Length: 527
Ligand code: FAD
Ligand code: MG
Ligand code: MG
Ligand code: MG
Ligand code: MG
Image (tube, rainbow, N blue to C red; front, side, top):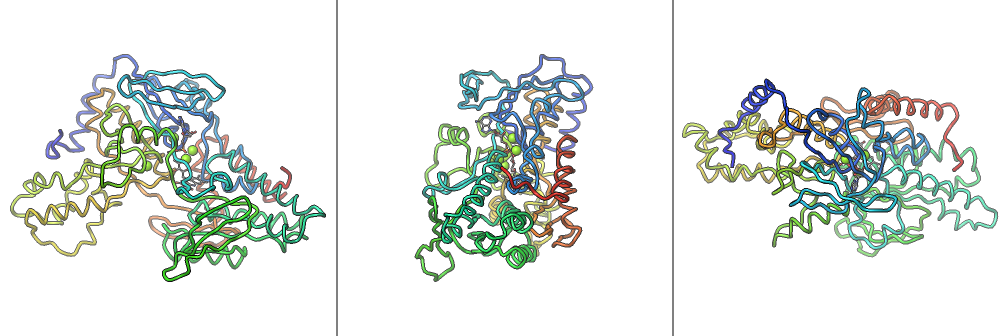
């Protein structure tokens, strides 16, 4: 066990420097990476190929730039603009940096360090590893609600976006047929989006734009039948943004795009032609209301992929009285609990840092008789956060604390327990998955020996802001120093940020050409 008093970031860097004096000369160590998403691609692209022999395994032979998927649903962008072939990502400056197998991992034998895989085209195989990096992402969570998986569309992959576009086009063509009844037209052209987070809002906005700007030209007779509803359980859209941004998004969607908002409403069932929901307003009737629909997009909730469910069930059995785990539990250095050579990052992992309250005794005596105060802890937070990420500025705000009282040992401990309880693992975003991938590659590069890796400083995410397109040429942004609520420059800003975030010039170029094409010639209305 490592005592906090012997740990410092400076000490860690000094070790790294002395190590760098004599370069790594051992045999290449075998790293197996599961997944080709945000976390994994940023990890293996930053890894030193002189030290590690990398094998990437994923059922998708491309990386998906998820933030642009809503635009693909409406045909604003083509599918090619948001995927990146993995084969080309495994080369860097003409040098091969990783092998790739198109397969999904079905099981991990932690004891013998072997992963079992099923090829996408049939056949099984096994691969040995020295280090395993699990970055398999997440699935939409239907919260066990009946028949959602069978009757709703999800939006996680580019195939989903293409299927959604096809469904929308099919419904328009069906509604246009002469024998289709008026009532059936209303149903076919009612698009329901469940979930008022960024994905739900952007998808509703893109559908509404598509209908207003393109379909109204080709199907003018059908426009009176078209409606879009957005159902959200909370009291506002974009719940993680400031309230004035939510209000702006709600106003744009309802007033300019005629999207019907159903806030404080929980969906309780989805079947082939109807959605049932109940109001969760206190005192409201619990009688389900029914909406007929032509299409439902389920854009709500983060759940575990089958492999993660399996690993949790087999290795982290339910502890009586504790809530079930969400995601693979990792320590502050992203190592799977109890498995020092296995790492998990991105959406599939949840950081469970060492508890401050458990180190209370040590911290109390370190502060000394003079100063066991919240301010003392606040002053030392930057150093201590290298081991306890719950002390990083994004997680706990010492500036807000009023009192600077000396605390007796038991109160000092309960103050630490309060900080532990306030900790939330990094949110499941591309931004965080990318940072985790780059962080882990740095740790691997700077600490080639297994023992050194254990001393790495904790992962601490930084927050660069959040953006969302809310339709009608308006985007919103919640940024560290200021916010943006629409305006004629907001959409160019949104586009510039995403173009810059793309990982190759290939997809930047495709994206720019797609936007130009949509601007001058409209979206495609074929299939
Ligand atoms: P993913 O990127 O999902 O990658 C997981 C990989 O694992 C995939 O390649 C998958 O095929 C593979 N895999 C799955 N199972 C197995 C298995 N058994 N064996 C091997 N491989 C497997 N985040 C933002 O920060 N900003 C945004 O604007 C934003 N917009 C989004 C819009 C949409 C529509 C969606 C769906 C998500 C958005 N996100 C956004 C969230 C972001 O996409 C995720 O947080 C991010 O993809 C997580 O990265 P990851 O590497 O953990 O997983
Ligand atoms: Mg990944
Ligand atoms: Mg991805
Ligand atoms: Mg995902
Ligand atoms: Mg995570």
